[in-house]
Image (tube, rainbow, N blue to C red; front, side, top):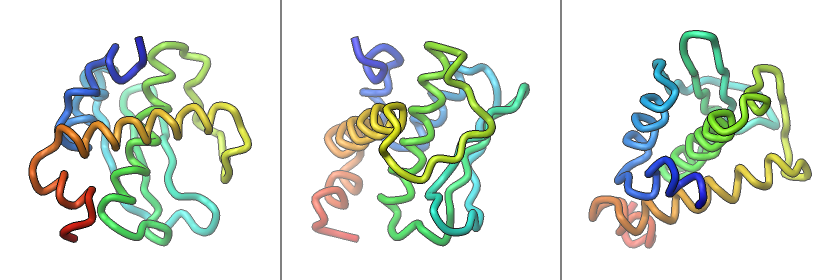
Length: 133
C-alpha cells in the first residue's frame, strides 16, 4: 500500500486538507509560509521538535498549482519521516532530482496532485485541466 492510501491522502480535496492530515499524523502544528529562499530552491521543510514548517520560495513559485505542488513535495518528505524517522532532516539542501529520495518524493507529490485534481472541488478540477486560471 502506498503512502497516499496508507495515510488517506488519496481522499483529501485540497492541499490545505492534505496539510491538515499530515499535521494530525505528526501530532504537532504545521505552518506553510511564503518567503524568498533565493536561487535554486523551490521549497523546504523544517522539522522542529514541536512543529513543522514548509517554506515556499516566492521567487520560484509561478502559479497557485505550482505552489501546491511544492507543498505536496514537502509533505511527502514529512510522510517519509513518519515511516522512517531517519528521513527527517533539517539540514538537507537539494536543488535537483538526481537524489533517489528526491525522485521518490517528487513521484509521490505528483500522485497527490493527480489525486487532488481528480477528487478535489470543481474549481480544482477545472484549473488542473487548465480550462480556468
